[in-house]
Length: 596
Image 1 (cartoon, rainbow, N blue to C red):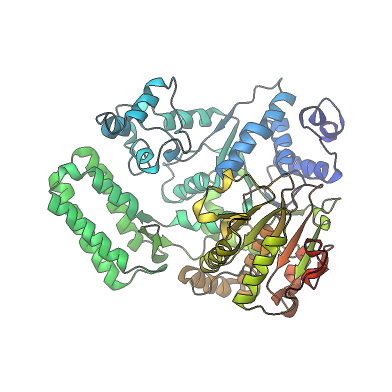
Image 2 (cartoon, one colour):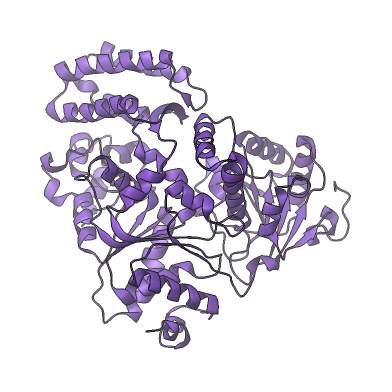
């Protein structure tokens, strides 16, 4: 049966979605997805902003009634699907008994065991938390931002801290209750980090998993999978968490022993500046750390703490016993150890087959010049149906773009940022490739225009809480390229400091690139360039989100015009009016004596 009626009949989508706009491309997308799901055929789809991706896959999911896991990248997008989009179809298909559930990582859920171990015995220190606990009729997730991080840590458990069936509160554990609910649901909404961790676990131990076998998995924002999945295939030890565990166990060990571990941690941390391979020197220090920890655990820890220690021990030794690049990298005021594979293609495709019958990979930024080769090669899903959806209305044509004709110095860029900030009559988003440049521009602008504009730095705010207005200027790096929707046409200017090529000095990226070249040839054309174009598409996509939006892109990197590969980036901007001097932009109408 055709899905067209849901788009045309006023009693369906037009009734439940305010200002619903009928588009042939949306019907085409929904029909294509239904056909692939019905035949249990996997597919990869690029559907641009405004094509209604979420509605187009939810409609066939509800129509078919198959057990489906829907995964997206962020909790914000999870909530949008759960509390806005799915509600529409629950109304339309109210005659169907379709069970909906969500499942997030353990650290989102309240842990009774840790609460009664660390919070309840200290009423003077945690009186506000205890009062919250007493007043809460039901406790499941920890309210976001309600308590500071150190408090939340004491009443949540990760997979290492959780003692599962041995826990006296297991039968009322919020995580396991939610896991049971998800196992019985027809539609489960989760995030990539939770699901990919589970898929990777299937590769290591097919008996340990959180998600039941599904008929379909839909990966929304699928472009991010090649970068997220490698982190779950190997093993890792987060020393911030390990040191927190030792602090919690402090009452069982001598103060001098605790100080020893603190000093050893501080020394190892001082040896780590950037992400690097674990040297023999650092490995020796780590071996000593765990050898001493073994002595303490065997002589001083209680049974529960010893079980946690064993998990850390096993992960540490797995890092050096499994295939992959052995890395140590800074993480805040701590560091993390990792073993990461250079090629995930075979592991991903084989592990995925253990979780579902068919998969749908969908994103607005997943192809390069119409080709899905890079994405499919990375995930080992080459034998898969492919579809590119074209909007009948080209949103990007609502925008205009300035591209610098010249290679700009850092000082010249600073001047341009200042003049854009002062002339802009609406919100601005400045996207950088490096933290250093971002901070430099922020400090420069803060001295000159801070009293005239609201300057927001990504490292100092929660991006999901930003209320964009005409004086807002947001400065950020990769994190602001995707997942942040400044809707309502209050964002009018997006500035790209440089083309988003990644740092080739990164040790893991360099090794991964070499492995990719051995398999597919020419690493620049087949690895670095496709990734940069996808990131560029994400950055461009921040501006025009709806058909009534307008705005201006300003690109301060002339390689778009001067390098042969520039055409791949220019293809993203096809049909966009391009200016070669800043003063021609409406932002500077009335005259401008700046750089051009």
